[in-house]
Image (cartoon, rainbow over all chains, first blue to last red; front, side):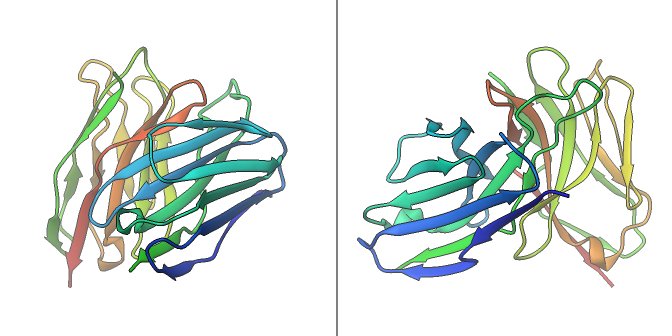
Length: 117
Length: 112
């Protein structure tokens, strides 16, 4: 079966420090990968998605970047954190091909809570 | 563009009360529809889904019917429990990578 792992689960960082959040998926190949952010008391905002190694699409301009160095690894980074980067970051995956018989479900990791002080 | 309009929260109910959380969508065509649930401090979990018009998704006592005519996918449960307290998100896939477009989420609190 497929599993998705995110780490660290919790992170407290000072303004101006770098960031690296990692996400890995097991039990599948060629997944689509996604990074979402959930600010306190707000909905989900798609930050980045990737359909293959080295292929990154950004949904909103921001202080963050993403990379996909391996097929099942997705990394969210920042060179210098801002206070506004605080939030709950969620990684998700789905099959790269839409299956004809039903919905292609997005499966989420447990999330990484980032607090920037 | 694609969007999801979800009932504003927070919603507070007593145990065993009836729950409805409204969701309507704007999309090209007739996408699959999802409800996700987020328990405190956790990621999102798929609660139920429907892939075509008139389909009814159900799980854990929750139900939602895909209404093409009204572009709606309202979530219902006949008798809520304290353990149902969570944030509920309506969503559908859109875009080239089939990323999910989410509603704003509805916070549900069930009191004993």
